[in-house]
Image 1: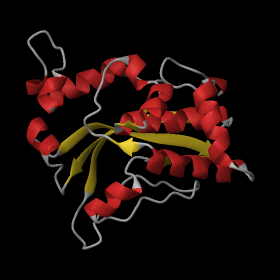
Image 2 (image 1 turned 135 degrees about the horizontal axis):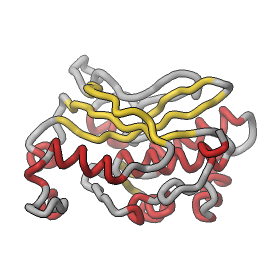
Image 3 (image 1 turned 180 degrees about the vertical axis):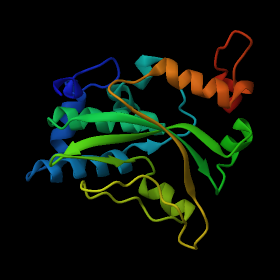
Amino acid sequence: MAYLLDQTMCIEPTNPLLLRQLQRVIGEGRVLEKVVRWHDFVRDSIAYDPYAISFDPDHLKASRTLENGRGHCIHKSIVFVSGCRALGVPAKLGLAKVRNHLGTGKLQERLDTDILTPHGYAQVQIENRWVKCSPVFNVELCEHLQVKPLLWDGRSDSLFQQQTAHGHRFMEYLEDYGVFDSVPVPFIADVMRREYPHMFDADGRFMKEKLS
């Protein structure tokens, strides 16, 4: 299982910037406690930016997201996975298709759907158990959407809030594409081409300007 601790093109457990930030955050205690603190840091200190879609591996690197201070759900999950591997905790990137029942304003208008795909999450092995988490929606965004921040104890799955504080449906998982040892950039691009064909030109290139 050593490969689940490895450095890849985007997952960077040995990157100096990531290691410095990790040491500032994790504190003392058991590995589980350190991983949970890292989860909370990634969730709240890196702003969620649904428009930060990119198929450039350099833009998906954990260190780049830390430098930017913001990222898409995939970016944030990559940062979290990188930190877990740096702590010696096996971790993978998960991808899924979700529906946002509250809508996402301009993004929903541009994508012409309330389906968001692929959505990034993480799977980690702690205390001999594989658990999933989604360190994506920061506290400020949750307050704006009137949903409770997604908590994670490191022992059980914690993916997305199903309801708002007023009982309205929020996030719904439609399909799980599985977990990956490294970031499957071609697969991510193919999923988006199938789901949002109008966002690509005749040569299959993503037209990011359509998000603006």
